[in-house]
Length: 160
Image 1 (spheres, rainbow, N blue to C red):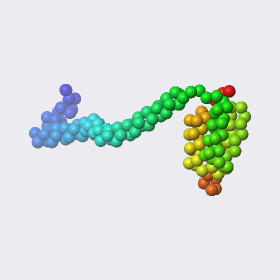
Image 2: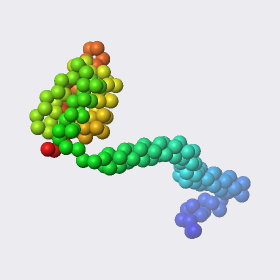
Image 3: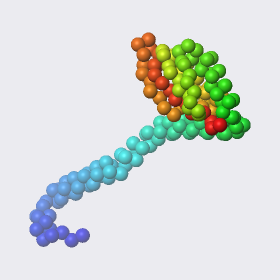
Image 4: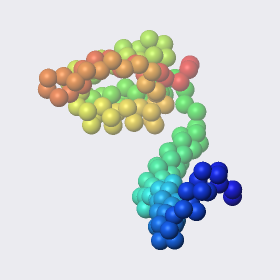
């Protein structure tokens, strides 16, 4: 590498000790840049790899569980509208009791909730999905003063 004439002349005027110190300083700066730009990011990735691997394994297990649930639901025999409606009515009566009222309009069922406990609501939604093949399509829910859920929930049943 050829240096510009002014820098080459200045370099020649330096004492050997000064040349050695400048070369050592330049090597130190080059090493620091090498470390900060190439080595440190790679080490950070290696340090966090185990944690990321565990998190991804957890996500994969959850996805496989959901896949298994979906396959189980797909393998169930088709259910007609009347069977679905009966199963949904039983679910609402069993899980939500007097905290829910049902109104049926074709394939849409509107549940009006009044102080429905959260765990009972979650269990009834899961049971409605599995047993009645009903899917929630609208929800307007608010947390009531007593801690239960108030509002409306619209479920869609399989077509007639």
